[in-house]
Image (cartoon, rainbow, N blue to C red):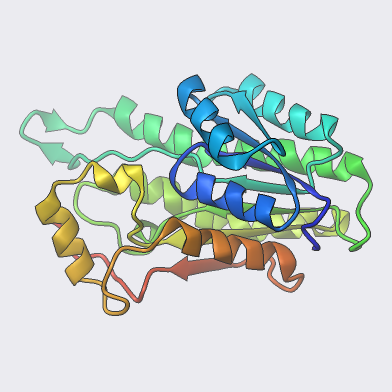
Length: 255
């Protein structure tokens, strides 16, 4: 798909990976609608992105909020591209000092990461199908975000790993479902990236994670993630695939 002249919606686009994706798509000639829960972060994002971007406040776990973001993209003539970068993380062993992991915590992570992502996919895809297609003979491209934890999750990551594995697992069925509508679906599984989420870790933990990355031995930059998303959008043969971007990192057991 040629990005110039298209309309994209980036869910979770006010910081980290999502903000980098929004900036990349704008630089490639798209209009972009970004979403996030914080109006303050939304204002900061728009100041960074410029006047071809719009912000819609919303929570990925609220279907009306997801629908509102897609509706804004439709008002602008799209969406042709949808990227879901919103998510949550948490850690907790199945049985800890306080007893079993609260079921509500497991459900919360799955609701945000897996159910929320599916809601973005179904809502964006429905709008793309109604849109009628583009000069590229594609109605749309949808990119989801999984994690390398889907494949080698650490101790305490049962909920997070399950939610991200679910995203990886539904990628091919989604692509097959939407193929007849000329909508592609692919997923990126990032490793250790320099984002606000990772910044919450203690310095010692961040250093250990970097040391475990073979090459390049550093945290990934959000712009590198965004570059892969752009390539997926532009390459019509990438469909139904989950692509790791991790410097050959494999998560250790954990502590």
